[in-house]
Amino acid sequence: MQTVSDLPEIDFGAADYLAAPLPVLADYAARFKLGRSRRGVEIFDYDLCRDTILSRSFGTGHPRLMQVLGLPEGPALAYKRNSISFHDRGETRRRLRVPLTRLMGPEGSERFRTDIRHVVQQTFAEIPRDRPVDLITALCDRIPSRVYCYWIDAPMADAEFVSRTSHIVQQVHTRDPQTTQEVVAGFERLLDYVDDRVAAARKAPGDSLLSDLIRATDAGHLTEDELRNWIVKLAEANTDNSSHQIAIAVIELASRPDVWAALGADPSLVPQALREVMRYHPRSLSTSRETLEDVVLDGVLIPKGQAVFPNIGAAHWNPNFFPDPERFDIHRPDRPAHLNFGGGIFSCIGRYAVTIEIEEVITHMVTHHPGLRLTASAFSHSPMFTSVSRLEAVLDG
Ligand code: HEM
Image (cartoon, rainbow, N blue to C red; front, side):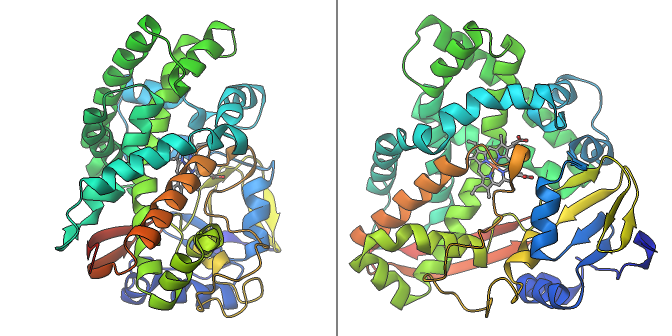
């Protein structure tokens, strides 16, 4: 039987990967189902990725990530240890997720749509229309952080702090210990902020997501500490990922005039266009797991405790599952599903809410700014993420 050391070695620092990661991942996927990189075992095959994401033999990769970063004892590590991310399959993980999956499932999230639309309209009203604007700060960061403020009943003015801090703490996924100090300070500020917001919502309960979670806590479904950890987790996971995925969607759609015009003519195509954006250029190029026992994958023995990365980018560009993967086609069938939000008991809690956010942003843009002109855009890619480092446009180009 083969072992991990027999696997082909992948270098995510190679110039060809950095220049055009998805074609390079497609090439790996065409040749290998599995590989190894500096961070661990890489899974390139769509079925194996999905199976690994769902399998009971794989648990959370977060504790190892904190070790790699060398997070010191203190409030940030204590938060991480007690948050959802550190819990493997089992009763605690299931119990912790229930109130959130109820409130933020497809129907729960749908009730945010009107307010999300309002946030989108308000945000566009503040953007000059006749000159190039940095849409990362003016739009992509503002939408999810303002929606978060609405969820926790905070003044919209707090959105800038929320988005800045989310970008800082999400640096954990760089696996770079040089970021640790900044990340720890970011978490400490976020913890203090959330304590203040929970105290304020307790004094004046309303119909916000936070008030709903406080009621779930008072009913005994969460402890006070678990409530606080969830509100921190929603800030941590929310703005950074959502901002980049909004920016990716704007670039991929607005840079294709025929697609942009088709969406303007028929906005009901927006949801399927976004599915294709998330397949073609996902924010999540991989997710992480760790083997809970010895596992055999495609004839390779993966020992217990091994870091494993279902490579979502490679899976999405596998021609056996997505014919002509380099072709951007908003009319692809919706199966197989994209893996941008992971899956199973670890799946993204915010996937329905953020999908609504991006739908509302794109629908607003194609209907109010059909002549939008991109003036500058740039991506950067790590093994974990697609990021947008530049996005400028004239709304009424
Ligand atoms: C487009 C934006 C987003 C992307 C691409 C994204 C992607 C992901 C992925 C890949 C995972 C790991 C899933 C797995 O390994 O199976 C995840 C987990 C998670 N996401 Fe998201 N996410 C996004 C936005 C959000 C938002 C808006 C929220 C909250 C409001 C959120 C909350 C979470 C939470 C709490 C988890 C951890 C779930 C758990 O461990 O049980 N995410 N997300």
